Image 1 (cartoon, rainbow, N blue to C red):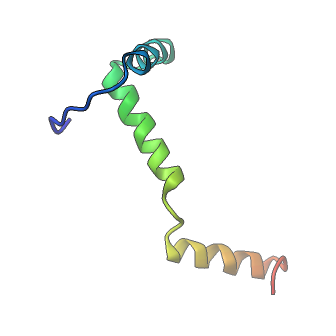
Image 2 (image 1 turned 180 degrees about the vertical axis):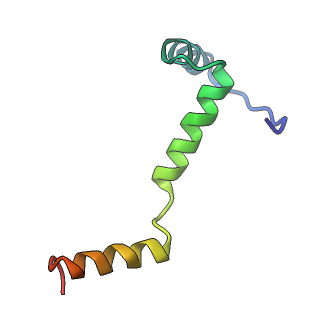
Length: 65
């Protein structure tokens, strides 16, 4: 970790602890890190080169012209 601190709602922390334990994470910090990474991946737009590859593939399969 990089040492930053954040204040989180107590109920949210409690729920994170329960989920982390149930899912087998070694710590609540590990769970939160994983949850944030997953959320950021979903929120990030597709890189332009990846989008172009997908379009080329769809064209090759005949789905788009």
